[in-house]
Length: 320
Image (tube, rainbow, N blue to C red; front, side, top):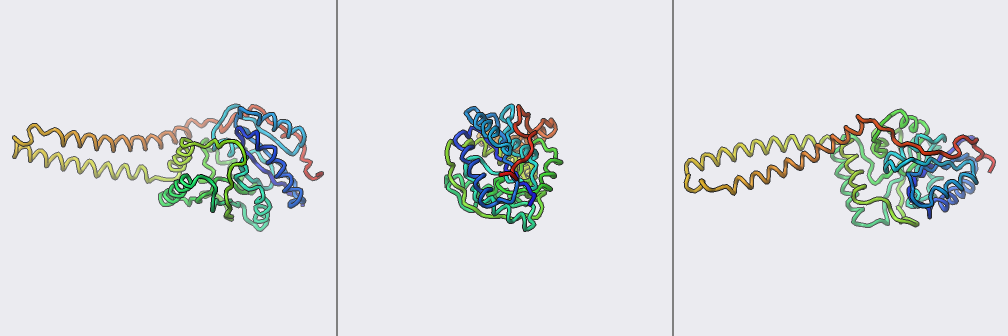
């Protein structure tokens, strides 16, 4: 069989994980997928620990292990997307470097791909992550799914297999702010979803925080929903009408009961505070859409490479 499977692994400060992960992947190919060629592509988002020296050594030891070193940290979405577009296999599997995505699922993904599925998604049916965080994720997925006109895949992080034909679609999109999860749902081919239990991180600390989670949520919200702007329009109209009615009623009462309402400024202050807070909220929401538009209009490159290793060397995976 003359097919190549690419494994893409984004990294950022994963010095304790990259070498064990590489060994685990090589073991899977040697024992369960011996008929396939392989390439392992790391794309490093400007790590500050020993990740890069370790990757450099791994690339020197095995020409089928490749690496791209970004000049700076270009974020959790751009780097993996760019890496997918640099792979050369007949199919590409994206997995994280911390062992939360089970390496043991690679043969299952390949099997489903051979059955005709162009995309095979790993779905986090259960997880060993913080239960409160998982609850928030679940609520978010259900909310965005109801608000979006595009199908959204619940508990899908990008872990999965993508046929070369879909990788070609990604290359053609030319999106400076790509959200892979939404793109898979919106533009993906025939898809197979496989549930799995997300494991705990093997070593090191997670790079996600509340800001990065918020960033991911707002990117999908502004990319795949219109409801925020629609709500702003409707609420703005309703509150404007309500404020006019209140002002009219207050004016009539003030004319009729002048002594009582002459010094009554509290209703006005309360109205100003309420309506101003609503305005600020929707101005902020509108700002999120504007930032999303601005990023697309500026059209900066996804990443800037500092260097790449082994991309000019022939594939020797058939000689294992």
